[in-house]
Structures are given as structure tokens and as C-alpha cells.
Image (tube, rainbow, N blue to C red; front, top):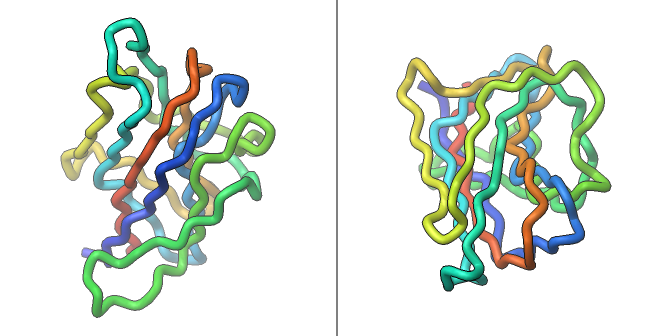
Length: 159
């Protein structure tokens, strides 16, 4: 087993005008594949039935990095582990989402923003990426109906 890291953001406001955005973008270092173990996304802005909405999201492997808005420093779960060698970004909006390269959709789903999203993959189903495939993104595919205050954490193993 490799070393475990979290990539975290929030609170950040998801603005309705932003369109699609990448919740997370991770780019492995040379010869150090990455495996996603878990994903959590929640919001604190909309609480009532009238504000309920469903968001479509995907995990996509193979884009080139976007060089987007929020560089995020992965944090080791074990405080004795060294800093990660992979690059991470979070919350890249429509103007900066990863879009070039040869994308492959690995997972597609929806979630209710009032409930949030909690995914913990079994070992056989964990999305992974190597340097040869460039980057893995977790993308929101739906324009939010109104502004949301969002938070998220991605659990990543670096081999």
C-alpha cells in the first residue's frame, strides 16, 4: 500500500454562472500512480425543499491539466509521511476546466445537494491514473441553479 493523502477545499461558493467545474483535479508524478479511495462533497447554502437540486458528476481520466484556479496542497493522513509528489487543484470553473487530451469517462452519477455525496470505492472499483494518462478529474456536469457554499474532500493513495 502506498501513502494516503487528502485533497480538500471549502467553503467555496459555487456560482450559478460558472457552468461546469472540476471539483478536483489530480496529476500523478513520474512513476507514482494515484488511486482514489473516497470522495465527499457537501454544501451549507441550501437547506429547504424549494432549493433542492440534483447535480450530475463524472470522473474523467486523460485530460491535460487545466492550470486552473485553486492549487491545493495534499495533506498526508499519517503525519509522519512526507509531502506528496502529485499535483492537485480543486474547484476549477468553466473557464479553466481540464479539456484537452484524450478523456475517458470512468464514472457518472448524480447526487442531491441536500444529502451530499459520499463515495467509498471497494478495492476493485477504485479509479486510478498514471502519468501516461496525465490527469484525473472529478467534474460537476450540471450548472447549479443558484449559488451554493460547497466543501469537499478526496482521499488519494500515491503508490
